[in-house]
Length: 350
Image 1 (cartoon, rainbow, N blue to C red):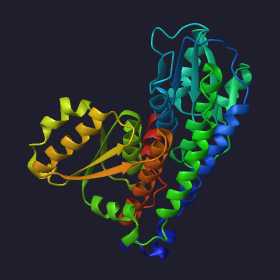
Image 2: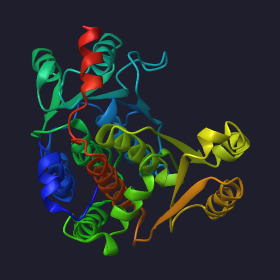
Image 3: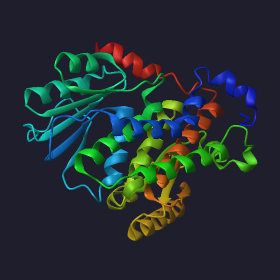
Image 4: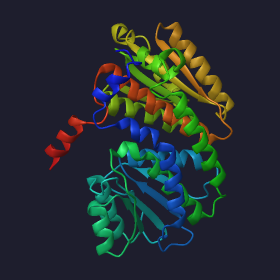
């Protein structure tokens, strides 16, 4: 597939996923501003916060917790389950139930349990059952408008939650970080645009390298959730097999598993993501781990992000991965929006 053939993009991308990607910087900025104005739940000095969601809603929470980990004074847990942990009881525990559609069954289950256990509750959705139940039960609900797949609304799932935690926990103001992050994302989007030819577009070239291969994405520290995002975007947009792993945990198990099966490993490519704010030891681990993979005959690539702050590196890394997944979908000739197998499973679960 010629990734410089612009006519093919219109033929393949029937639901216009590209427009959603281009709009991600503005979405992040809008969500942040909205979150600063929305009503807060009736809770002071929470003792713990649980961010419940799945898929695109959960990845925003992952990014947030990773970004704020060094300044959080209370436990903040990302929950991808049907049930709350046993300790999550009482008004001083805030449960944030986030679902793009408002109909995610795991999130609705946690929402109901939170009410039964007397937790403080905040729900976030575009509508659906979550919004209806919040209205009926007179709970605080944050609504946002977004037409598209949940994975394309990650700006909302991060920006709203960042504003929420800043206000509730009286964290330092992140307005300048948001502003600079939006600026560098817009710049990067221009550099990776479909009109930029392969010769000058590193993401198009990397997408070509991924074709026909199984993919593993590795990162550390604040960029670990970005590795997970790359994996899920490759799955959902390109319909391709991908996994993620974290440094330094991978050095204690995964690194031993690069011998067999030889045929499968010969078709593997490992993508390492590194930023300028990685822990120095993890940065070294990424370098040495990649060397061991190459010595084992496994294909690797290192993608580095260097910006003025960790948030900007996190979000330029995320946007880079979105474009990578998109170009891989185009290269395979598959529409990046439909997720038929997931929809069929949801129907079977009813």
